[in-house]
Amino acid sequence: MPLLIVLAGVIMLLLLITVVKFDAFLSFVIVCLFVGLAMGLSIEETLQALQKGLGDTLGFLVLILGFGAMLGRIVADSGAAQRITQTMVAGFGQKRVHWALMLTGFIVGIPMFYSVGFVILIPIVFTLAASTGMPLLFVALPMVASLSVTHGFLPPHPAPTAIADMFGADMGKTMLLGILLSVPAIILAGPVLSPRFKKIRATPMEDFTGKAPLSDSELPSTFISMLAALMPVLLMGVSGIAIQFVDMNSSLYAVIKGIGDPVLAMLISVLFALFTLSLRNGKKIPEVMNNLAHSVSSIAMILLIVAGAGSLKEILVASGISDYLGELLRESGGSPLFLAWLIAAVIRIAIGSATVAAMTAAGIVLPLVSDPSVSPELMVLAIGSGSLIASHVNDSGFWMFKEYFNLSLKETLATWTLMETIIAVVGLAGVFILDIFI
Image (cartoon, rainbow, N blue to C red; front, side, top):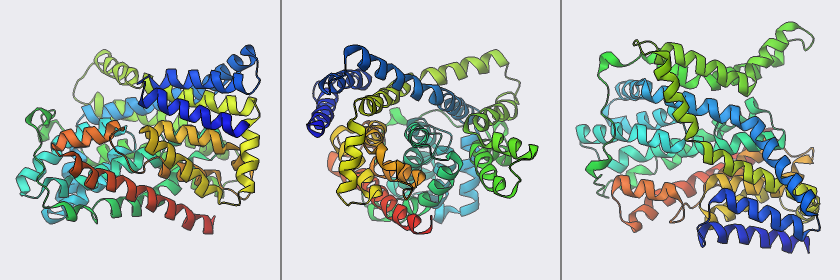
């Protein structure tokens, strides 16, 4: 009976979002009420679990995602993203411009949400393709693959950040393993795949040429641009490594550990970017603060959707379904990593949103993380990989890619959908390989 209730809840969630076209957050709340009451919880107990899930999820995520949105806005508005692109292209040369854009997409994609990074970099992609005479998709796909991988694999992006917190995974370790996993996924889904699409004539619409690039004199230096974009990774990564060599009882241990905390690392990164990028050209603090306020308001719905998924997780725990499912999954004999990937993949195909798919899958497989043989960090990455598979007509990213490159449905399925599927499969394979050594 509990399994049927969970299945009914997931189906209800899919139907509300895809057929009824309800807002995802409202859909989560309705499903939470249904599952809680169907499992015998009182209305009061159900509402308490719902509120606890919202609070527990948002308490951590508001700071991380808020700072992430601010950092992304600063990197974009200051011209740092443009400078990084120009430097990469100059370093790699014209023949390897697609490799340059792959690395640019990865660097810019770490602090910046997928859609923001896409819109910021796409005018540069159009310009480079036109100036070099290379096919547009050949140049663009590696950049898009990088943005997609960072969105699914790496904190401070919404799903991996929230799931890492839910699973009790070490954020720095998750990021380091995510970067290791990202390399083969991006290469195979980007530079290796893109030459196959040289014959597809992508003709971007003029309305989508985006913001005019800044002049060279207006751009920050390459060093500062890259340092600002990568600072969260550097702080958490260096802290995670250095802490292994410091006495736990020393004051230095506390300092190093504190700097690697995701909240403090993001705050330091935002402040660094604020003073080295935003204020360097005489911009006034009120103007910059206004821009940052807009960047945070743009993620409000993302926060609510993720919090709604956190509430569903709490309902599953409070009603006892979580323990029941955990035991059922254990008895299935399947690999927890594969089960996590598969559940995320199925929900992704059905519902479209990678974030919703990842958070829903995380709530279902949460009991499996209590197994000491299971790495919570690899579980985060397994779910992130599965949540990217087979993007199609129910995913906003599918339509963004299609319209910006003015492709047919068939061409979008053959390029974008294939790229996302390769990322998901390579991600799963990489998780299994990493599991051998962890």
